[in-house]
Length: 442
Image (tube, rainbow, N blue to C red; front, side):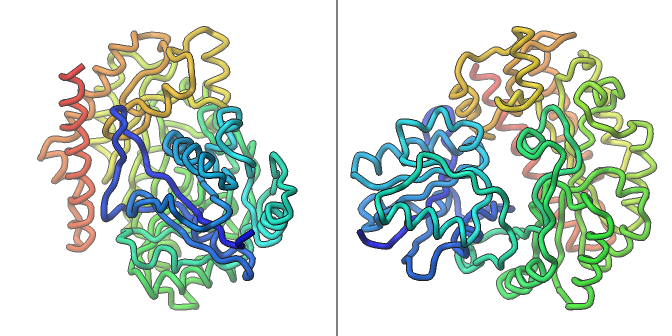
């Protein structure tokens, strides 16, 4: 057996079966840098990111390893079938493989759950070499080793990904992370985060923390920020965080000093009943002041909102528009609620006979622009119809996509930041125009 592994990160399929390809993207997952670094040194390896490059189906690798982080699993399954037909050993891993393992039975030899480190990968590949591969491996979480950024070094990625933790202290009903980690999280040793940041600084000027919540542990965050400052990490970066960071003026000061310029915050809704209904423990009335504090620290906010929760009505889009256009949100990120199989909200809606799809595959290939369910309603809302939800969502998007709103959200004293925000908001407008065209076609 040739000791060579071929790592593949699939791209997305659009609803018409086309593959989403390109030469640049804003951020990429860390799956490949982590897997590459975890590969035993006596194994030859090759990595392909299908969004950028084509897959070599004639590879001489003995083991094909496919990692799926989301809706790319549909394309990943097709890739697996092709390699299985060529008598290759096929291993599947990643978040979506964990949730959709029952769909993978016929397309792969083994499914890897969790975050495998060097010890896990040595075990898996030794088993493959000895023809003793197990049907499933449950690896837990191993993130305490430096990642291999050479696999991303020649790609046009605006924010090079970096990781300081896995999991989230919160346990929201709609969240895939909560479904896996159940409000638990694991912190990475700061020395490895700093080593990765130094690697990134050699190939990029920008980074993006791909943690689900960089504010899981305040003491850890402050130590990390001080280490970044002490090591002169010269990167501008963004991260996902919870809105309560707006109360922590010391952390905001250090975030800015360490290079943070953009925070992604999930506010989700302006209804306290909605927040309570999905087990998200924050107060809507605190949003405005917290956002103001963040803005005054010099950091911009990208705000996540979802539409279609149980207390939403046809009046909710106007409320969201008024709020987003009046507070300090530079980049709105909007979605119709996605009832992802495996989450508690999916189980509840299914029990209430409110799910509008029969098979998970319908959720995996549903939207020709986003390749996700964000502008399609796949459930029966409580106080609206699915059609009203989709129409209201599109109207909200349109109001926020006007040139006047784009310019207002993009204003900054820093010309570089203003250019970046303007670019992001132009993409927001293009997304709206694409959705509008698709809506007219249906």
